[in-house]
Length: 106
Image (cartoon, rainbow, N blue to C red):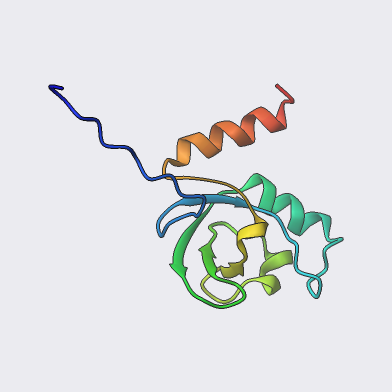
């Protein structure tokens, strides 16, 4: 054997700095709010912190509309669980492609 390939470790958990697309699954926040759900599905956030609490992923969003800013803190941060993260990637372009494909039903 001339070369031995090292196997990659596969992990089903997003890491700090990854880009994400989320959904609103929290019962006490109006889950029927279409504007909040549409914003989360059509915008990309970035993980800024990972904690060992109920909401273990702290995600920052940019350009949050004024009518849904009450659901975010002053720095446009919000906590999400792993179940609420629909897609994640290290590359923002991958998620932009995913959003465009879903917008045009391709």
